Length: 427
Image (cartoon, rainbow, N blue to C red; front, side, top):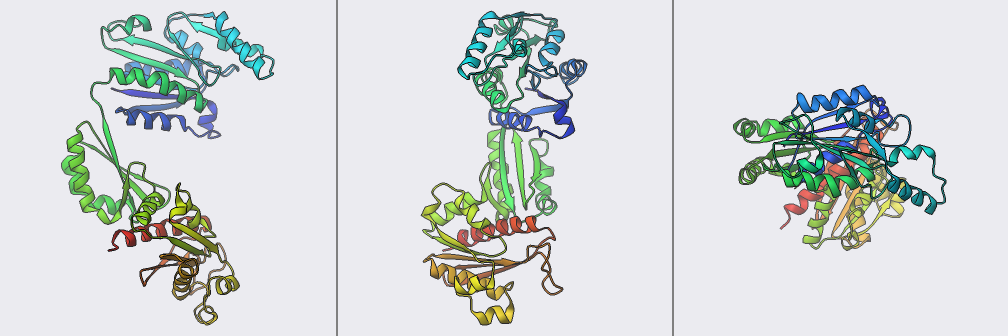
């Protein structure tokens, strides 16, 4: 099934609004075994909408076109007009729906604006899609491949190959409601060759090195499976596999994971902190944190997981040397001789916080996040992470970036991954 998405709105083109609708639609379609082949964002212009619908139909030969935006009551909401013109249709005033709209506004103690009358019209040949969470109804037309146009009622009975055209609101919750309750059930019914997709989640390795390690596997299987590399903003790359053969997908996934196992932390929607949480519970281990430059961000990630009280005992943000000494018992001699940003201080933070908070694992983080505070010997971006576990202290030194926020986020991700590796290899 070939699917196209059109998002409409001048605000999308200008960058004032981020197009999250098409991303959500694409993900939901993929979960149902379908993938998007083409996506276009266009302005609120009747001619542009008409031409793009025609291009999706003739040039791209889409089996389904999903349009979002332009169904509201204001002057720039012209999607319905474009659909009516494209399908050579007319609309008529829907007294019943007008009464429903007025009743909704009265319950909210609002006077119904005359502008909302635009939303009370219905198509003569298309099918109106009920809006369960808003006022703007969607619209559904079907074109078959033996004639230019046929009504929804006739097309749903079967016959020649047909293409669906859906006009949905741009308001996310309204669009999502129509997708779940109307669009997806129709498309799933027509689906013949289901697409299966699996993502391998990795961290701690650049995209180029990752691709180099499995380049021979990619070359040998590129005709049977789409293999895409999806780098994230912070030190992570997903490898997405898409095909129509489930058995082949499973086999390919195993061969890739075997090659890059030390970088793989999960699959599909797994999150690094969730994987760490599962390992902590599996190892019957609790964890405590002493954070300086990350200011509690590691504790936030560890407790983002529901049920985190089962493994997280607590954390201390110890920015000053006084608190490192007074609350976490870092020796004054250590601070004087090696400095707050040192592997010695990170190690003592880790060991002492584990002891003080009666935890199996202790984590100590200290560094120079920036943008100021760096020296020639200890530049901005220098971070030390200490992890205490089973009478061992693991120290990691990182030279990161000049950017303060990036350094803090990267440190947390690197730390979580080190905890994951330690627990995974623990006996």
